[in-house]
Every structure is written in C-alpha cells, then in structure tokens.
Amino acid sequence: MLRLTLLTWCSAALGFSPTGTETFAVFGNAHTRVLIKQWSPKPIPVSSGSVLLPASEENWQRYVAAMILLNDPSVGSIASAGLSNREGESGISVIVTKFTGAEHQLLMPLWQPKAPASTTFRKLAEWHHERLSDKLLSGAHIARPEDRAAWAEALHLP
Image: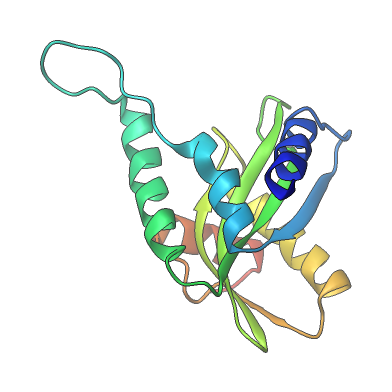
C-alpha cells in the first residue's frame, strides 16, 4: 500500500508544474530510494566503446554515490519540484540529505538537466528557514566541488 501511495505521488509530482515557483518536500530513506530510480543511467546499446553519454556518466557517478549514502538509515532527501531549468521546463531534483537531531546536512544533489543549482539552493535555504527553522541546514558536507560552489554562491559565502 505504501509503495502504491508513493508511486501515485511520484506520478503526480512528475506532472506537477507550478508557475514560477519551487516546492520542496522531505523524504525518508525508503522513499528516497524509490524516488532516485529515475537517475539510474540507461546504457545505450553499442558493440564497443563507451555505452554512456557524457552527461550520463556524471549522472551514473551521482546515482552510485547517492545509493551508497543511502546505506545509512539517517539519510533521506529533500526534493525540489517546479521550475527547474533555464528553458522553463519543470522537473524534480533530489538532494540526498543526512538528517541528524539538530542538523540537515546536504550531501549529494541529483539535478534535472540544466537545473540552476544556486537558485535551487537559495530557494531551499529560504524554504528550510521558514518551515524547519529549528534545524540547521548545512552545505558543509556536499560531495562535489561544483555543488559546493553553487551552495556558496546561493548563500553569498566566500
């Protein structure tokens, strides 16, 4: 029943496209595992050489890292739905997050193609402050340098 509910939500969320806004939601470990399956790369059939497109290689690395992080039961995610890229297309980006008693540690973003990372991080920080202000939102543990730079840009950090 829980899986059916989640699949129904995911189907609805994938078709969800609020005008000009981003909506955020927090998911636990099991729901995050289901949610990130869309980032599982699909190799292209070739007789020899690389079977992944360059963008797929990065997605593969992020997906594998996210699945490893999810071996910790305190890891879940914060998902962002809404206006996701420069062309105005909507989608869902998922940021794998470790939830501790006092802190939400951002670890590994799984972005939609061309998603504006710093804008999403800035809106996430605003949303988190409004909704979950009793918890510290930290980007200190973000795995990839380009994502750490986007986090710093979003918060105007040096």
